[in-house]
Length: 357
Image 1 (cartoon, rainbow, N blue to C red):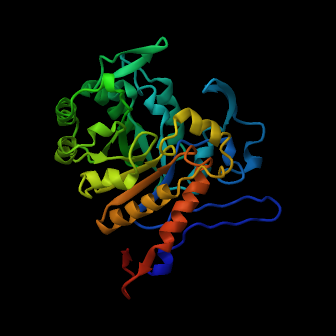
Image 2 (cartoon, rainbow, N blue to C red):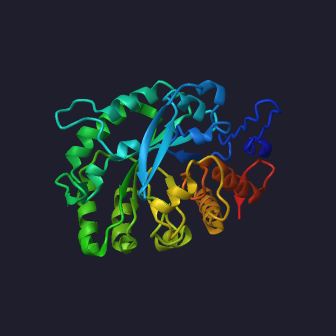
Image 3 (cartoon, helix red, strand yellow):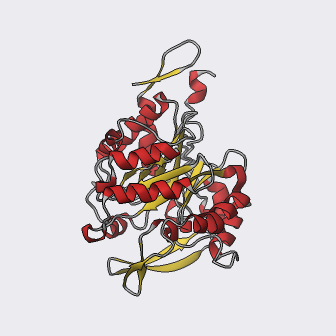
């Protein structure tokens, strides 16, 4: 494979009549996949989605963020076919809010939506699924407060209501499962040993699968005892650029520079600027059609690229998942990451092998 064939990167075409921008991240590198956290954003019309294709289509929904009422336009499900013309991987995050099957084994609305997504998946199109919070959250929101979650780290709930139906629906398109443990306040935190022991018991009872990744949002738990459990079970540590976590490079340094996933994959999620709350980042980024001046933190891009290079050097396939909230527009953030990654690649042998420094 020649060097040039590996660098069919970001193709930016600006036809004078339509102004449509074509982003293509499919062949950035054999061990790199760039995608986004969720899809179907009307703010991406003219970038990822063709405006004329969705005129008069889609739905509108009201959303209250930080006391402000917003109207979001969501494109129809068939737009995912156009999404994959640009990106090789997509993180599906609506599965975080509801399992695929209910307690009686009947398909939920999320199952039906994911079934619609499946119709548009072709060879080489991959999905990362967020595991429902019903499995990963110690407490769940209830009537303006929180209550204990009886299904927390329940392997039967995960297997029967999510894992099995996901495998059945998606087959080889299923790239991985992301277990997200949301930030815990001091008064809600268990000792590190207990967290590690609970995770050890949970992952020991799951089906043998090399596609598990855990995102820990409480810095206290980024400790050797927890990492030992992840490594033992081959569960990847999700490196997340998120409000109350340390910078990406420091998260990775805590592991000793290891990728734990048994399948040889890594996940980097760019979610919010550091030290900026979800509500504030959402309101600044809305309606997600452009980059917001001064919002993108340069170290986020540099750290991401450095981690991509380290993954490639270790033979790890890295999935970089980008949200709108770190800067206003995920496709343009993806372009920034890909461009910087390309700048730091160089050919080193006549055989077309790559070396990253």
